[in-house]
Image 1 (cartoon, helix red, strand yellow):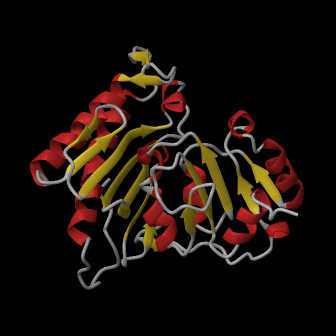
Image 2 (image 1 turned 120 degrees about the horizontal axis):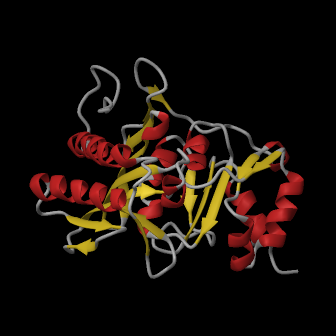
Length: 273
């Protein structure tokens, strides 16, 4: 499902070719993963960190790497399943199936994450959820887009500027408990208009679409974060770590519609009395 990189007639921008490649890579990875989705004989193993990995994760990442090695041989690659290759200033950071636990149970909420990072800064991002027929993409300076209609629709975060009117997604309560922030999360849930745990990459895309104002989680790797950063920022939002750091290798993600970012950070990090 190759998706146009932007509106017809738009002038070329610095990362147009990289974005087009990322979209083609997502097509190839999605073809591998959809071919085995909900298969009764899907092969699944348990990794050292107790998370599942399926034959489809491995096949999809191999497909991604083949394309990158052929078309961007000077660039580095960082993938969840096969680690880091090369040490270039341009790194393709990929997760072939984000949400493997859902994938192996036949739950359609999983995604392919493709990103290009330059000097540690994500400049291209593609998120594809092929089981739902949905895709989101962005490149620095080119806006953020999705495929909800006959032609690409530009994304824009919400303008909600009061925590009491916000809708939030928080991933699992156990994760927040382990990070030591569960009480603060529960206090926030009492303040906001609506709270849900949608899970994995989908809520970040809903934030970029203006349907949520806050998504955060812990125990994240670069390949869990990099792809959605350009999409959210080009839609007008903001992504940092839980401590407000802009780097993608801090182990956490704190994404908002931008206007509420400092207020929400302040909720979790109140000033000392």
